[in-house]
Amino acid sequence: MNGIVVNIGSRAMESQSSLSSVEVLARELGTRPREIFRHLVEAYLSSGEPVGSRTLSQRLPQTLSPASIRNVMADLERMGLLYAPHTSAGRVPTEKGLRLFVDGMLQIGDLSSQERAAIEEKLSRSGAPLEDVLGQAASLLSGLSHCAGLLVATKQEVPLKHVEFVAIAPGRALAILVGAGGSVENRLIDIPPGIPPSALTEASNYLSARLLGRTLEAAKTDILREIEQERAELDRLTAQVVREGLATLSARPQDDGTAADDRILIVRGASNLLEEIDALSDLARIRTLFDEIERKNELIGLLDMARGGEGVRVFIGSENRLFSLSGSSIVAAPYADAKGKVLGVIGVIGPTRLNYARIVPIVDYTAKIVGRILA
Image 1 (cartoon, rainbow, N blue to C red):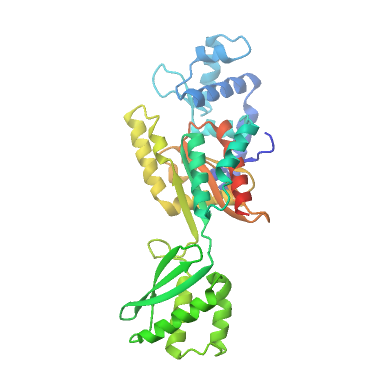
Image 2: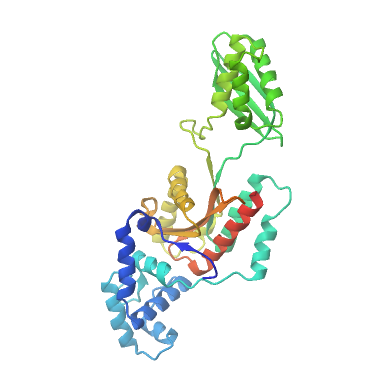
């Protein structure tokens, strides 16, 4: 598979017995049922339509009658690998069948040199801000897969050039942080009641001088040590403002301000999921998927499962509780810096009828390029 490691999804990770059942099932299939099953799944992933015995008889290299193929398909259906969506229709793989196919039969191609060069060219724009690189990576995967591109990243601290505290209510102040690149972030902090404006000004000047060109994390210990050793030449109230400010600014609250979280989720191209809707049931499924994508914390938690291992992870449908209703799949891979430290996860989300053989190498290579750029 050209050096690409494909890992199993969440259910197998959580339950060793589930992994064993997949392996046992693969061994139970004889050569002929295995080939029929593989060709059926490949035809389904290509067309999205139920696959009948006549279609398979034209695809299979050996000469088999449609009747012989139907008998094998019936056996595969009894094993829980196929099902008939309509009476007298062809068959499509179940989630169990897709898992078996991905884990044991998927034939992954390699990207061409032109495709690799195109991915590198789109991402390797010298001097682009970090947020632009990450957003472009998610957009790139969305465009190449015709699904939604996902990326989870650890929030990166930026060097600061100015800090200012502005009183807005009794006991409350707004902390304004200006980054070296011009970014601005506002946080609410608690301050001692009745503190004079001069103390806020002094605290602002003190922090601005010591944070200039440094991140909060890098400077926090030195600043607190200086205050504790009474070398900061600050009065008691001003020193308290500095302590409160550092504690709040270092906490990294979520958007709702209720809990600490240092990760961000980027989603690009979700509208692609609307392009291949053929029935009202598809529309309902996509609406459910949109709702699931909006559940940011749970989606981040799912993608974080891909951080623990090397290579690409594939999560199929109801194997994960988050997608139990929409029946969707995620193909994801971690990206790391030059020292091997995992910085985040990038991937694709779409219907279970993904072109896994095509998407797996794209996700794998894009993750490597993103890690190289960020390093």
